[in-house]
Length: 474
Image: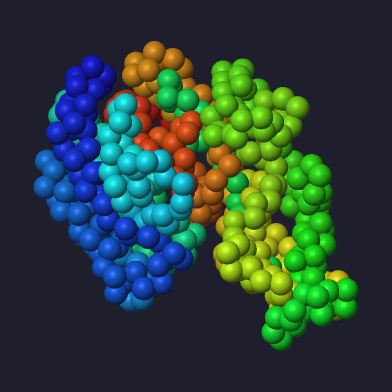
């Protein structure tokens, strides 16, 4: 593939078509089902599905058929099939993946920005969902078109765009089963829903953490009571939660305590982590919007990366039972609740870890309070198979040609449930897991942005891999 010709075509597509589409896409508040229980009635999800479907159907992709697949009671899924071109084996398949549902609004957006307000500034497109993961469908087809425009052969390609990823992809297994015969046996999976260590080279994700999440609640009273009357007699529900959380983490260091939440770190991942730390230096932690004076955890950048990618880590993502400050009276409250998110090493079973956490938290509650842990969803992580020589060579070629620097391999701290699912379904497949979520892009948070120049080059790297996949020598 002539990368210069491909890049010129892809740049034009991004400028003339993709960016305008993403601007309209960002305006749609199509929150994932966990954050909008009435998503079907509100219609925003359907608006996003129709927008991506309509744009895709208008593109000049040879051999493409597409449809919106619907299973009763589940979020819809866009399914595209592009027939093999040229001398490719007709049954050899590439599976490309993305999602169109979004995280909720969050607070803290900068002046002039907002989750549903698309703004382009310094070649970054701000707004919810452009980078996570609205661009995926557009970028996937642009890469395929770049290959076809040069008359190059490619394998049969299936593109799946789901609408439930931010809720744990709980609808996706039903679609995979429903479409099993049409998906086939992919030899390569390309997922455009991951991160990047910087915006200066291609980054391939080789591991993803899993997650055990849920709500921990402690009840002590049937109703609130004057704190002067009750304190000293009635135990504090918040203090009980604090004691229970000490079963999971050291409150001074944040170190997770139960052994069942850990897994051995493979030697190859340790070597890749060292290379990543060498490449990024203090950019490992300077990418975060720290309040002035706050120090990062761990003693060096290697340990910080391992903490984020191969060690369990606990976050408190929500709290219940506490009134807003301006409504807080002198009342000993009847209950407290915490929404907790435990990130898990790639090789820890998410279901087993969630059950073990429930047992740890509910056993022998302090003061015999009524304690419950209700799991939201459990997700296992993913550890990539060894990268095939042809794929490494293709990634390196793409990265050097597009960015002028070589490909880097990284673990990612987030979870893509689809990857663990596919790893089980297709154990012989190779994986290109990559994305545009680089430093300060802030997916799920305020001021989320898509780095447009980086995304254009990433699209060309995908086109390179599609080309080389057809010419590989297994």
